[in-house]
Image (cartoon, rainbow, N blue to C red; front, side):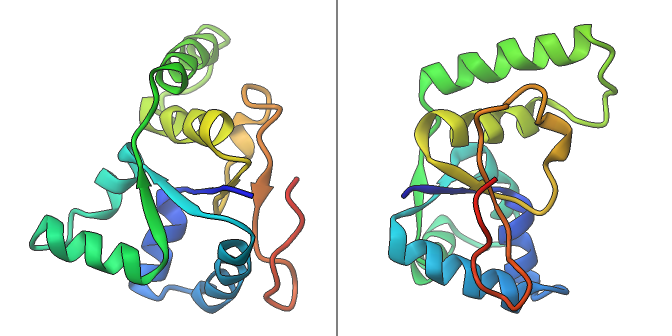
Length: 142
């Protein structure tokens, strides 16, 4: 099972913010089930603090995270979905990068590990989310 990672989860792990140990356990289980993938958009959001590309790639490899470029069909889906979101009155608090990350997960993975992505449920209804369950084990993909 391929798990795409939202930048919110990766940044939480990098900064060892509240809940990072539960996420580490959840992603360890997920890595045993299949690859952990990061889209080009999430990668860009997560690598601003690295002094070099090589260091960023090394750190991601240590976390068993594989760079997975955004495919054209995922990018197109994101654009069309963002258009529907804005036409339906969706606020500008969520921008195209959020939709690119979700579309990458829907098209190129089986689920998305994310802190909170409830806002896109109406737009990415097929996308399954992975979050830590109580006790730190991988929660069910919803």
